[in-house]
Amino acid sequence: MAEFLGQKKPKKISTEPNSGFNAIGKPIPIERKTAADEHLKQMEIKDPKDRFRCIASVSNKLENDDPYGAMGEAMRYLDLTGSYRLMAVLLTGPES
Image 1 (cartoon, rainbow, N blue to C red):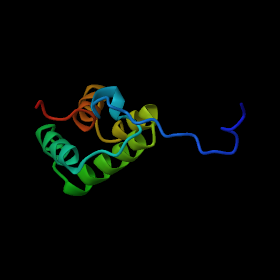
Image 2: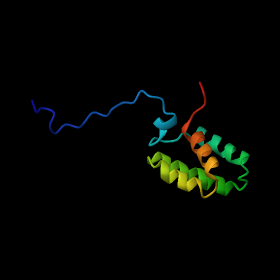
Image 3: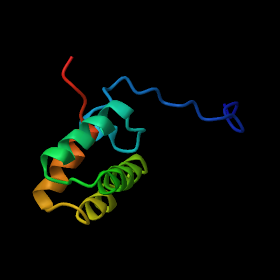
Image 4: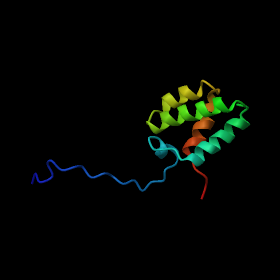
């Protein structure tokens, strides 16, 4: 009856898409970071160093399952709406 004791717990394999809220806590693909860079250009963030720092810090927080921290990092460079837009770009992939 206790034969499972001492064994490693099997890892749950997620079959859900890595998009939207399901993407929080998972690595963000480079394609989404590139799309976020283009998005920041459209939002008038001209300095490439600022864009890089913004994307890197927000991505890091999202990959570590900290959406509130990601919002705080984004607010260093953008307003509230821009912060939500950036997070949406980083968390959603292109339609297939």
